[in-house]
Image (cartoon, rainbow, N blue to C red):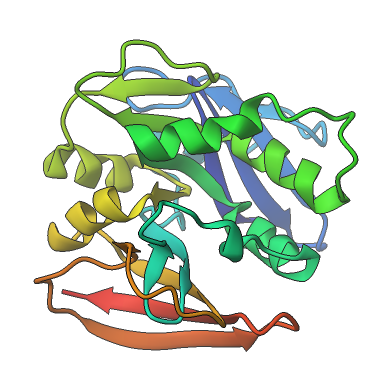
Length: 253
């Protein structure tokens, strides 16, 4: 008997991660067909693609035990709630290694990133981050996490992208994002305050992770949208050695 942990989508291929009764782990890679059904299953542990435990997967659009993907917003902000100051600077928000490692683990399960143009042009740095640079292991770890995920960029003006696994959408379509959540076995992250504000206002965001830095910047771009009322449930909190506080909330709009 297999217990499904999660599914990660990688373009035209999916990978299922599961645990056997004896505690060992396994995973399968398979192409996703247009009808939503998986193709031939490849068992990394050599169990055979037509075993009785694998066969049920070939007849369902969503595997048993795999929940709908959550839409998550992660923001690193000042204590007064800004992700950048009035001059557009955010150098004060650079994480140390402890916090960087925490963010890496937080975003490791992400299957798709949603970006506006400006946020994408900031984050695409990770596509070509040099392995020769004198950086700590958490730096290269995050680069791998970012490159492995799908990216959707919402822009009316951007003509081409400079990263793999990336596509452009001209409009932020609430219904399309809802369908993406329903079809995704992995979580989705929305990046950038403006796009996240639209998603929160559209009642699409399920959870929010705020990293509050011990600094007041007095103005700039706010991490959270105006004119949106929502009930928040605190799920977790953590204090880092550099004074940053992490707050993890569930959102109910």
